[in-house]
Amino acid sequence: MTDAAPALVMKGIRKIYRVGGDDIVALDHVDLTIGSDEIVALVGPSGSGKTTLCSIAGGLLSATEGSVLIGGHDISHASARELTDFRRTSVGFVFQAVNLVPFLTARENLLVVDELAGRRLRRRGAKRRADQLLEERGLADRAANLPAQLSGGQRQRVAIGRALMNDPELVLFDEPTSALDSKLGDQVVRLIRDEMKARGTSAIIVTHDDRITHYADRTVHIEDGRIDGKVVGSA
Ligand SMILES: Nc1ncnc2c1ncn2[C@@H]1O[C@H](COP(=O)(O)OP(=O)(O)OP(=O)(O)O)[C@@H](O)[C@H]1O
Ligand SMILES: [Mg+2]
Image (cartoon, rainbow, N blue to C red; front, side, top):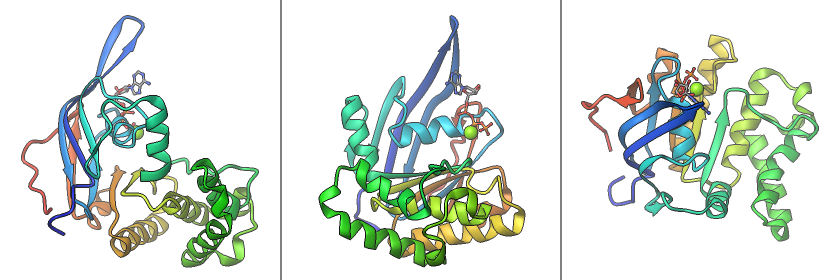
């Protein structure tokens, strides 16, 4: 992919958390560009700033300094309301804890994305899409199950389906496999890779697991809020 705008451009990002008079520098002059169909593994020790980086890339959190562009759109100065809109339409999140709504079925957990995006009028289309995403993940016969009635790997597949409901430019995976055993973790990462490549969607996958980096196009290391400067991108 050559001409398309990068999925993500972060420039000069600093994030300072203020806790009881102390400043914690979580990100320090981070520059990161992710190509329009690139999968990047983000690796670093606990506390190095990975979740903070993903939260800023996805418009969940504002940077203290610097700019963020998603698919060419600058969200650095967006209002809270604009950011909410942006999250509903342009990014997908899959977190370690999965965060499925416990009292909604697998299908309803996907449909809730559509409702939040205020697209209720297109409800029938959304249902078809939800069912298709579940079916593609081998979950057609589990659509009516609550999260507690699914296995860990199945829950993670529902979460991945949910992240794709809004057809995002960029999907942020924050340790999507850490709750899974290694075999299942491997399967889930392969699934993520296949899906992102099939859709031409970009992704950041945060992981502590070196084997996962094998499935990424590129690995970016972060330490103490800094990204190593010598990364050579494939995009
Ligand atoms: N809401 C917050 N308020 C204050 N400090 C925070 C907050 N969130 C994170 N931090 C601090 O910022 C730094 C980066 O945290 P972050 O959660 O981004 O790390 P991480 O790389 O995701 O770690 P882990 O691998 O343990 O999930 C840490 O020192 C952390 O203590
Ligand atoms: Mg984290």
